[in-house]
Amino acid sequence: MDHTRISADAQLRERAARVIPGGMWGHLNAAKLPANYPQYFVRGEGCHLWDADGRELIDFMCAWGPMILGYSDPDVEAAANAQRRQGDVLNGPSARLVELAELMVGTVAHADWAMFQKNGTDATTTCAMIARAAQGRRKILVARGAYHGAVPWCNPYPQGSTAEDRAHLITYDYNDSASLERAVAEAGDDLAGIFVSAFKHDLGKPHELPSPAFAKAARALCDRSGAALILDDVRAGFRLHMGGSWETMGVKPDLAAWSKAIANGHALAAVTGNDRFRQAAAHIFITGSFWTASVAMAASLATIAKLKAIDGPAIMRRMGERLRAGLDAQARAHGVALRQSGPPQMPVILFDDDPERRKGWLFCSEALKRGVYMHAAHTMFLSAAHSEADIDRALEATDQAFAEVARQFG
Image (tube, rainbow, N blue to C red; front, top):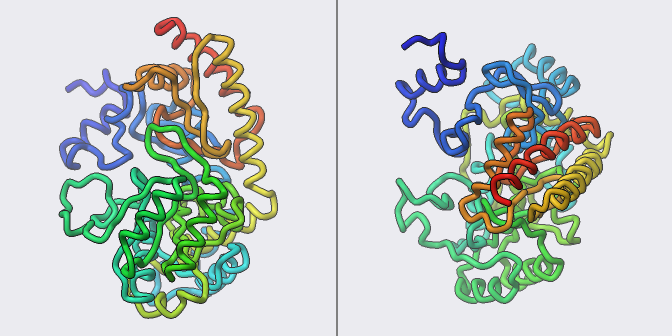
């Protein structure tokens, strides 16, 4: 094949197809996106990405969540590089482990202790193990359609797993207190824990913030049954509130799972918990070859400190509101029916009468042509690196994208 005639991205895809099953796995497989979406990237700076062919993009996916201060944030990278010169994976942890646990306990409202892993699935699985170990119970409640990781006990895609893997899962409907009460009754005396997402962010559906009544009902049911209230803050952690996403509800979980943004793109996850679950957390056996690596912990120390200093959640909220207001005005001007939902820091954009997301992907593809990376079904992400100028530049692209949607669909 004459490689001079195809893009760098296409060449990499061709090579990958020969040595990687399917060319890519999971949610990062760009084959699930329109053909003009890139699979490979070369660098990032602030809220900007450059793909393998050198195209610059304003990024509203933030590496699917991990980037919160900006790609290559100088303060985070300085801390990471300083630790790297001293050592990363050693025979045991460095002092960064203790420092980070202290910082998490001092930052997260419900936390009396913290322990660390590498990705969100590690953290949610650890939470489930702690909840089960605390009282020797088995049943775990999860919201119907919720995503808590990609391992057999909770993976929503059943290939490669068995019914037995999910034998002790019971589902309920998010934001439906009566449904949750029925699930608790079904579990009976075997209820170990109730998982709740920071908000309902099911793929391709309008996002829902938790109602105060639902959050308080979940807390009361756990108090009554002795089960653990487990907040999956993997996706939303530190974007909505530095003390934990359900601080906005005035409700504290017993356990919480964290990952994605807590180290600004460096691989790290955490579980935080209260003293009632300290003993169970100390006695379960969990481990990983890289779980005490110090570079990501140094990065996390710098990330959390900077988010506190600049009030990162407030910046992201303001920029998200600016984007949302601009998109609403454009949609009205072009006569396009649009539904924006979720917190402004983590929006999803859906079009009315668009079951196959043809309008959504046309809109995103047209924005991409003009240098803006968005997604038509998944939660998107604002970062503290998004400026008013970035938002306004993005809105110039989306205005033209709306015009194309209106032209093709009326």
